Length: 303
Image (cartoon, rainbow, N blue to C red; front, side):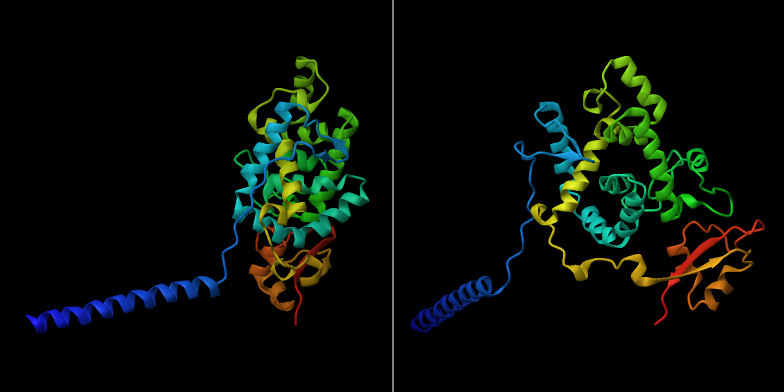
């Protein structure tokens, strides 16, 4: 019995020692391991002035304030989307900003491209395509080539120039940049009908379909979050960003047909895959160009 009690006593001491050692290890780990950052989600500041393209947003209106807050909150929580948008913005915004400035379009419209596509050259269920989500008929009406061989809705420069012309036409017709942006989403005819039938002249007073009702606020949410990412818990460094297009690409002007884009790519030190990435407007494995039109084909810099 004494032997058993002695053994039990030793085991108890060992157990206590191991417990104390474990606690000490945990305490040391808690003081030496870096603490995870907490994502900061902010609601709207009702005392702050908000603007879209120089036009003041009437946040004193309860409905307007709550609609803006909804978009700020819902997009703040879309962590992967916001991070990728911030990274891609460093690549694409320099080109978009330059073209907007050349055409006297407010810089805030760069966020319309984000709201439309999240920098994806995708196709909507309705058939809209590219960063600016042009429908085929509208694209052709504003000078973009759309056929089985080429789709310039996915040419960043040309589509941005076309978007500028369209937005300026809407501004001339409706009088404000906010209504021009709404027309871009809902269409000129539909917006005109709604303004007339509801007897108002402001986007913020319109009762519209949910998509357009939220549209301007979504654009403004991207502007607010991407302009002040740290305020919303996004702490990316410059090395996290994707390089601008001019830093990574060479280009070549061609005014003739290219029978084999694989061979063209190889001659320029690249691959068909890379031509597809940086020239998504090229649809086939060749370029038909009997008219002698000048196209600019981009590919990664060598070396």
